[in-house]
Length: 460
Image 1 (cartoon, rainbow, N blue to C red):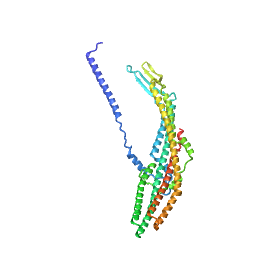
Image 2: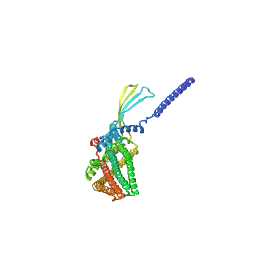
Image 3: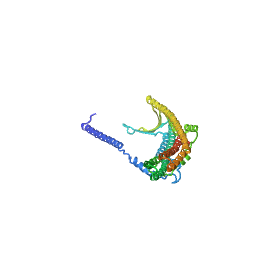
Image 4: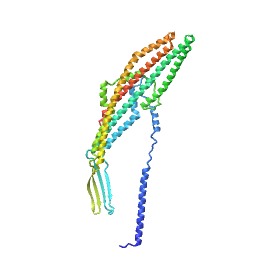
């Protein structure tokens, strides 16, 4: 067929313009797509030190759960910390995440909608809708794996509760110890002031040398300097306790607490050694979390074993042609899992994860038993020391200090004897307070190891 030259040239020009227009349109779409992908600019201004400072400033204003007089209850302090500590809030958020994953695991896959248009025949169109069917218990296994993760998250929350409670008791016991140390130092300063007054009187009477007077004055000044150091240390211990409570480190704390009363109310073993070992093996949150994570890994193995099985999809398709009315047709499709090496790798990875989880559980069991054993030893040692210093050594040291101070007043003892007796009394008094604080710490550790996970939280 003959085509005139001008018609050929016109067609080529028209085709060229259409090609240029099509290329320009495609370039515009590509540019818009790339611009949309590169224009994401998240706002990080709410993350960081500024937000935390503002929040902690607010937390520092929260009143503590006890009156301005009387001894504080450790249970009240623990309850206060569990309500607002960031670690608890983070663990609670993790539980909510695990709860949401249960719903996500049970959700069906989104259906797929397909549309086709004939190129040569513009009157030919098809519209298809298909849905993946989770055969081979895939959906049930995903739900059970998510539930195991939810149980593990609840166990981790219980462990965080136990850790926060332990940190509160540890910080509170050290804070009380420093307070008691300050009171003992005040008594020492008072005794040295008496000795200094006696030395000045005897020096004026010519009964002692200048060297004895200077030694007494030096000891008195040294005691007051040590008292100033204790005040500075109390600031650090206050920051530690506030941190354990979830408050600003600079927030004020009352100073009317009593270590002896707190020890009397709290430092009791929750059971015998055999009972504690049994309790730890059954309900320790760390071990329960590891067991629930192994459950999730076990389900993960079953999921990995189904990875190499085919997937099925069913659907319906509507076809519209120029030959007649539209027709509906059913559809069924199946995947072809022929790349077996990748599925074997998935199964081997799941098996290795299972072995890792079991080994980590065994290591955690050994670690928990060792921690319980050490805590029981610390409790027994503190119990013996507390009785020894309270009932024997401190009463004798107090009698020695009073006797030597009276003899020094009468000129029958040297200041060295007085100073040595005071140092012995201070050493025994501090050792007694340290025994009380250590026993509180041991009980806190034991209670942390024996903390229970609420059954309502793990039965989901």
